[in-house]
Length: 102
Ligand SMILES: [Zn+2]
Image (cartoon, rainbow, N blue to C red):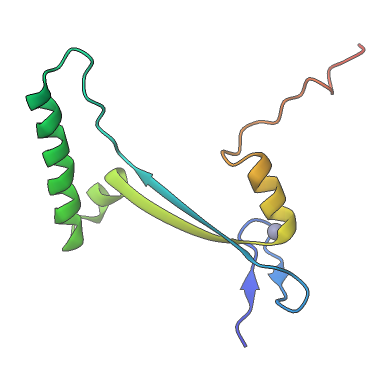
């Protein structure tokens, strides 16, 4: 039987007790058209990205690939899922309540 562990807190997610949540993230480079650029530039950028992505499909060039396009997948227990949804980017929590009433 396959055991899944939470990728955040490392505890085993027992499918009979817990729901396992899967987080999939997709991170990719975008080329925003320059504000003062003309449409030819914009199209060139898109073609450039397209070419990079096509190159990735037979990619030996993984280092480049990770710069341009990356997917990640995590298993989370219900507890970590809740934390993740509150703070998906792992930012420092707001400390405003801790610093009150000095
Ligand atoms: Zn967890």
